Amino acid sequence: MAVKIVIGHRLGKGESVAEGVRAAGAEPVVIPGPGADMKVGDVMADEDAALGISFCGSGGAGAVTAKAKYGHDIEFGMRSVQAGVTAVQQGRTVLGFGFLDSEELGFKVAEALLKKLGEDAS
Image (cartoon, rainbow, N blue to C red; front, side, top):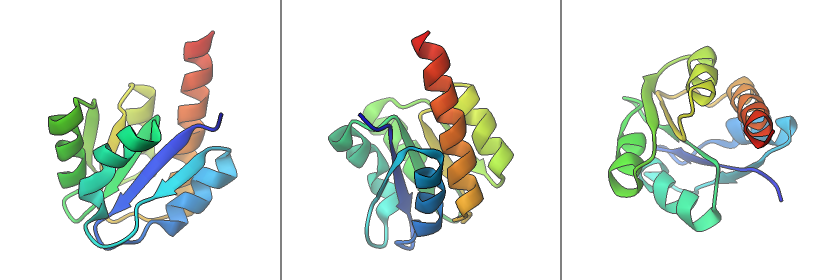
């Protein structure tokens, strides 16, 4: 079964991150439409996803909502790929970014998650 990563972007984007997630070997689930960042927790629950990535101006709204509604361990307000990788390594399950829809971000975060899940399984 593929490891799913949910992507919610305030402006309805996220395809670049999805390409990176796919290239790393995970399955991206892009939430369509504006305001998608606020649905990350809901879609993670529906899809049984391992990780959620939320994008908005502040980098926090969708992640904070996922924590409040589902109790996810979050990191938000991030602005770099390395911050996302570190958050995954620290066990965060929802990542909140400012607008950083890049293939590199998707690839590196998915790669870190797959590595962590492999380590946790052993």
